[in-house]
Length: 267
Image (cartoon, one colour):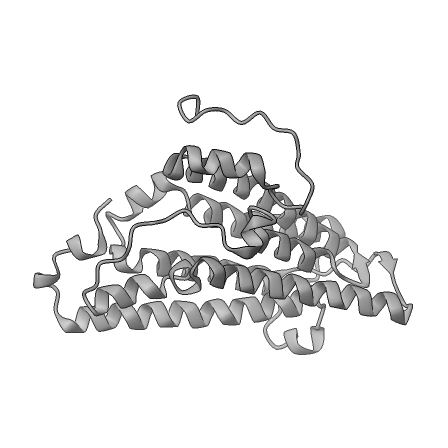
């Protein structure tokens, strides 16, 4: 795959470089909006969502089908577009400096659609009303958000969301090659950001069928997506990542699942 500076900067004018950074910023702002709407959906904050949310007058079974379809609409492209094979093909269509920003944009739009079109199914599974346990659950929810956000900054938040790539192209700077590092939280679990998201998904004092479908579906997506991500990381970093897998648990701190890690050649 060509580097950002191999996109022949001599033939690209300043306007194009500025356009790319503006596109990256817009994609990032849409991402922030998408996350805000999604958190409101998880909190069942209908008073804030009623302006943009759409509830269809449909039977229960169709509500379940629609909710599952919305999870698939978000999860499938979000996972497929992150794979190396797709990126190689995709780079022929979308300029490399904004390839990541385009991915962020598509993921954000599908997340907004999921949050706005989600059909609540209010059959309660549990309803915790004790103040102490409500505070505990809300605290875990906040810990999950903090964990997910901090994890992105530990590995390079701005590169993860495409801003750095567009900025490097704007100022004509060659980006550094990817390095394998395991800062702080990444010494406890291999995917602290995903752990944070799982905590957010399940930390609710009122669990109903709709929330259960959302939490279960996205948790399943995280597990599947993490499997494919780790396979890509082994291909990129080889034995270093295999050793990391042997030493650090995947999602739950201090709990290592027994696994038969194949050698690089076998993978």
